[in-house]
Amino acid sequence: MKGTKEEKAAYCRDYRKKNKETANAQSRENYRRNGHKWKETHNAACRRRNKEVKIEAIQRYGGKCYCCEETFYLFLAVDHIAGFGNEERRKSGFNGGVAFYKWLKGRGWPDGYQVACHNCNMGRYLNGGICPHQSDGKLA
Image (cartoon, rainbow, N blue to C red):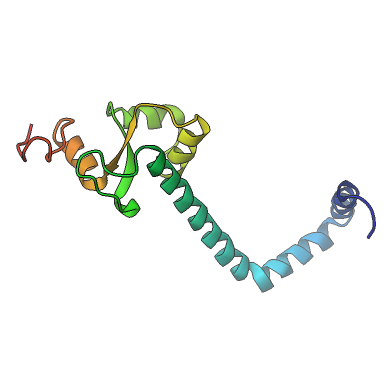
């Protein structure tokens, strides 16, 4: 088929409208034959992109835990310095993780965040806002 990309796209849209049942049957058959390949490729690509976004966010906010200086990215997360994470998640509609990192990136990496390992993050939460490392193990 000759023509511009837009002309080809318009032709395909028109064909699908006029031959809806045939086009749907073809799509179902292609998915039946190749769906597992697409799913595996798609999932692997999503995992790779999510990892890249997380690593970028961690690097933008210092690359290591603010308290214990852990640097292995699997142990790290971006933490709210003021401790208002739950409130922010409720307002913004995302649950955290990659959606949160993308939200930060889309806003130009705003201030008010730091990198914390999961131990320091949870310890700070359970200890009234102070990491147990910084309070010599004393609970608040």
